Length: 89
Image (cartoon, rainbow, N blue to C red; front, side, top):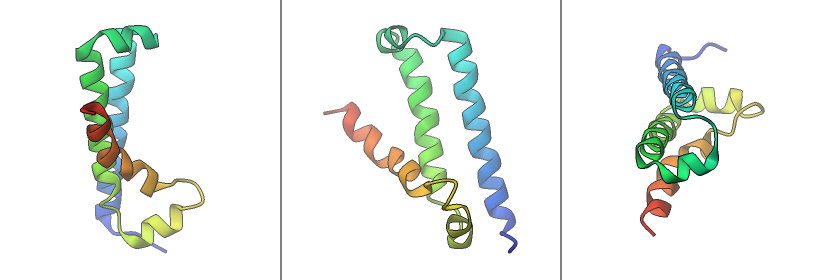
């Protein structure tokens, strides 16, 4: 089964956001205490996670079904819904 080119583009964007998170971790370090104390660090990671969550909801149904055994896209999509609400409550 082939997937629309759009799915490949979405996946490429998600990979770029993952790479941005990795660069942020490399820049600030991987200590959770540092993460909690540095608002810029938290904002950078959170915004990239939010973008990933939003993009995860845009895959075609065929792609979501085919990749379901390896990836729970619905759970990742929920990052975009749950994270902002938790941040302000």
